[in-house]
Image (cartoon, rainbow, N blue to C red; front, side):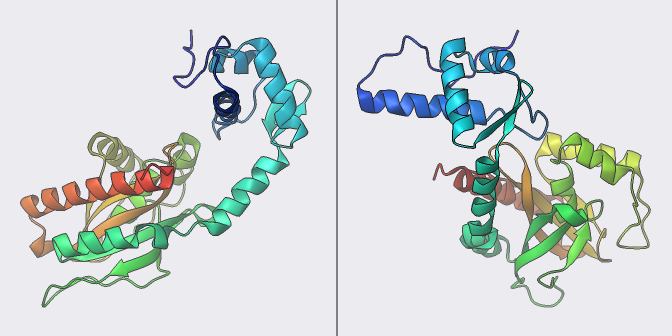
Length: 270
């Protein structure tokens, strides 16, 4: 049996009018938050069970959300309505991942002195695309990436950090598709990628060796929404000869910390 969501409020909740209004707003968002890519439609009985709200309270809120266009009812099942879709579109147009975390990229560059790369997830083409980079301050060999360069989701640290956190159906589509490596000296397989994905989930980061360019090691973490969906990735890229186990561990720790802070910014909690 599913437990009520932790932010569910009892119908016996009593409070001043201003607090009661906030309570209703929380309940409305509690309903909207249930509509995900994995579960895009619900009937009222399911919504009652998942939210822990009474049938009467949920019915009133659902009718209100339908009237405002945030839910759409078809033959007893509810989906997100056009108002919700338009709100998401407007948010996406205003969202700039580079502006959101560029100061944190600079912090990584200062701590590691290696090249730092920010990518965005291009769902339509199943790629990650370089949105920003800060070049290494090291002398001699260093990695440089061009803004706009795209990589398939099966090759390189920046790509695999995104691949690991995609919905299962999207991951499977990649694993069952063309796995031609970016670096032709390598051989990739669906089985190997599945093992990589398991390890990424265990560690929270990914390390790759020469998967995009010969002689380059990459470390990356995903940039995740509050629902755990990947928007892109943040990576450190450096020549293999400078990336021993200690350096990789230190770099991964820096990236993990930055990844948590970026996620907090996206969630609006900082």
